[in-house]
Image (cartoon, rainbow over all chains, first blue to last red):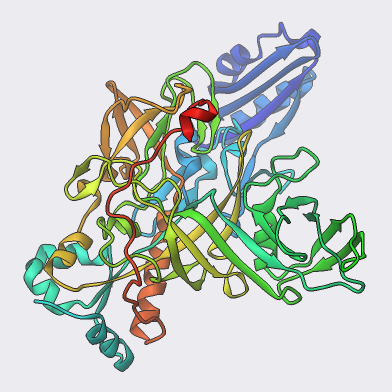
Length: 136
Length: 388
């Protein structure tokens, strides 16, 4: 089953809407909440949705219909291989092993599909090789 | 069996020297034993690439018209120490830019110089009869500088502690970002490839030894600061920070491949320097030294939440365990990160190997050995009488 990551941004009046419940129940999706923040300005929810392509599409349409801004996260961070010295500082910082060292070459590889966009690696890289994609 | 420097250099010049890296030799010794390996191999090369804070460069700018005795000097707004002759300065790697930023500093300027970029030079003076000029604002580069040589008072640490964090908050240190509740552990030695771990008593490394420094050929000039010989020893190598080197080399011949500015968030700057040293296999003892492997080299795990110069090690851990990706701390599996790039260390050891094989890198007999015994003293609060 495909997994897609989304950033949902919503107004304060939508905070009480049980959107994750609806997505599980109505669209048969498996949901992994990667990040969630709610304050007086509304909420930001980062989700990984696992399900069939059409079901994910329907869920996105539902979210947009109720007024949630939906942004698919295809590539949240980018590692600049020209700056990277393959030290490996990022490896122990990443909570989901999106950075791995190839034990043959000792190169550090970034696996985008594993990234949950937590951003913890960005300020950990001494070479400044890891940037938000928007800045890269 | 014994081999002299002369014999080794003759073989190097003829292109006949047998050279392996400190990683490759492990398997050879395992397969053939010390005796045969000693007969077959002339030189073993080492390498390391990591943050080495005690680094910097001496620069001579040349004289302006009219001439000037530079009292305060800035390079890209980073202060350089100019308490030397009129147009000499020392730029330290960890010096931050004067605007309060700790993300740009001496290390960046050094990297930019090595990259061939122009750097803005500003200087002020009180003016003298012989040096009337009082200020200058211009650009310099490696092309315009008379001398630009790296002089690093402390590089290539022989082993170093592993950092972790028992506290409830993230710590930002020179050992990188340390996550709370033993969230990770970082280490900073190339282990089995590291120069000083392959010649633990420094039989072949001392004053005058030619080394690979930042892509150029440099030399060991002195013992490094905080050099000490009294660390505990296991399998012939110290189990914690021990000997260090002061090194010198021409910035003009260096490459950004091996000289890189690094910035640790909320800590500050450092310079990642690549160092490689070829070790002559003079006898079987030397071969025994270079065949050391990560399983035999241990480092103490230190809790950086303890804000003291004395940290009691949690335990000692081998580089093999560190390099496996995780270590055990009090029953918890803790992920590890290297700050020293093993990839680069290998690249340097390979590069030195290539140069020795091509006859471009001759080995030097040391002019003088580094101290056989030395302790590292702490700084205490003293009265004048106590220290005199």
